[in-house]
Image (cartoon, rainbow, N blue to C red; front, side):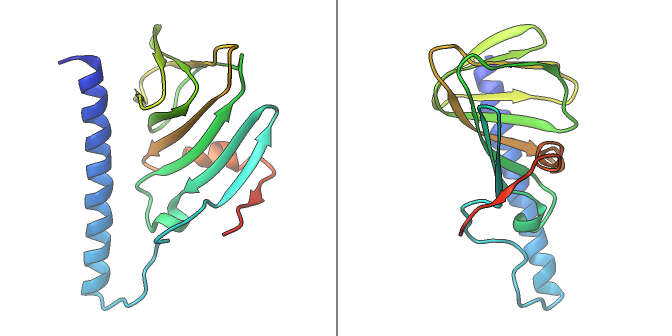
Length: 162
């Protein structure tokens, strides 16, 4: 099995788990006679902030997802940005929307371009490098939730207008 196949399989499994978890929560609420929904059916996001050339926009967390399945953010990193080696307490999934992201996992470099997915497990060491030619814009998903708070909890955020 190729690494691309493994990454896509992991991504699909994560999305399936989120879907099943959301359905289980819905089914439980129906059994309990709940008539109101506990999540946002659509959103432009929650909050955003700038940190140097980085732009962070929190799209989903427990407050608008109705559970702790995942966090999702839109992230733009500026050209030339290097994020040093680090670990996360959750699976981290990147989906590149525009630009190129150097995605180094456990010393192995991959260049992610639009439409590509990168996956990092909690035991992995990861670095992010943005080529000097241009910014990279991506979706970042952390499962389970909680990772986004590490970034958004320390920043001065602005609510996103709905």
